[in-house]
Amino acid sequence: MNRFIPSLKSPQAWMIFGLIALLAGSLAFVGWAVYDSRKGTPAVPVETVAAEEPAPVIEPPPPPPEYYCPLDGAEYEDRAMTLKRPVVVQVDNAPGARPQSGLGLADVVYEGMAEGQITRFTAVFGCRDAEVAGPVRSARLIDLELVPEYQALLANSGASTGVINALAAAPDVANIDQGSYPAAFWRVADRYAPHNLMTSTGLVRQVAAAAGYADQVELAGYSFKSDAPVAAPLGSISIPYSPWADVGYTYDATTNSWLRTQDGIAHIDTLTGTQLSAKNVIIQYVPVYESDIMEDANNYGLIFQLTGSGKALIFQDGKVISGTWSRTAKDSITSYIDDSGTNIRLNRGTTWIQLVPTDFPSVAWG
Image (tube, rainbow, N blue to C red; front, side, top):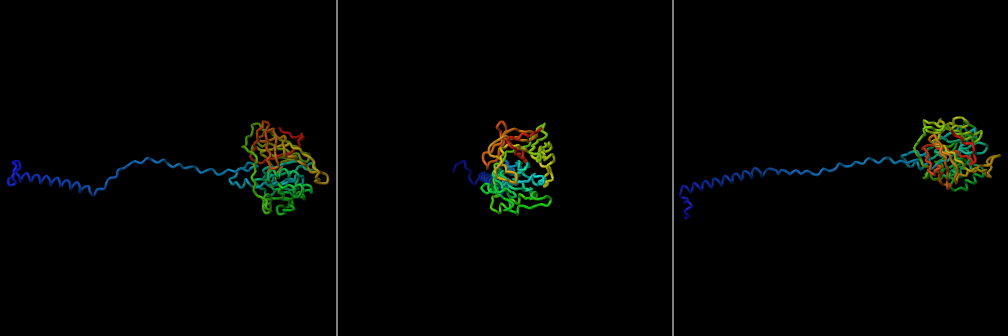
């Protein structure tokens, strides 16, 4: 036996063996205790920091769509309002027909000489309606020009034989006359016939739709701008057609508009109860001829040549702009161009167009 290993029979051997056993037991106990203390402990998760996500971008809601009336520039949210087919009403201006109704709601009003040294109005109602418009009188040759320009429905009380034949031969004129569509007209009791026939633009559209006429059109229309009144405005405009039709306008700075007078008296609309006014007054010089159509016992009907070009004066913002008018075809809207060749934009609102002969000398302003 090796001399270095003590015999188990000796006391030293038992002592060493005991120490080894004691040490091994201690190590085993410590190992078990450590294991036991950890085996039920949940693992601690390792926290990680995620990259910060950008805040979502909230887009503002789109603005409501903006649609503009092609004839007076008024804004509408409903596009259908700007597609309404215009109604042209022939309105009487004989002394017995005054004051008229509904002219203040028209988008565009034309005035020109008729027979007997009086004028007549051709009122164009586009996006707005007039519950009462009139007094309504018979169609004239001018309707062959203006109705196609606005793709309109024509409301009138009839016409002379020559004009009736001309209208019937015009495929671009939707003629809503009293004789064929009596439901769109009525007479009032506060004046004498023939100056007491009235209509409603809403009724005209209703009977026209029932007859199969289109109730919507898409017009190119005029160009518009915002008001820009000048610091030193003009005071007045004078268009003396005749002793029985002396037309004037006075500038109103508070509304940047022209207040209309007739024979020196404020021209009142009985429907609105207010003086007629215009944002734009246009003096349009046009060739005017006598036709071979007899309108009454003593007078021939007049032809207004509204296709082509000529001189024009445009009054807006308290000033006058010298220029020309131009219209290339009957279904085209007339354009107005200043002396530098720039298209003249109209102020938003009603426009009155005063048709005068090319050699008319008497328009004045100041």
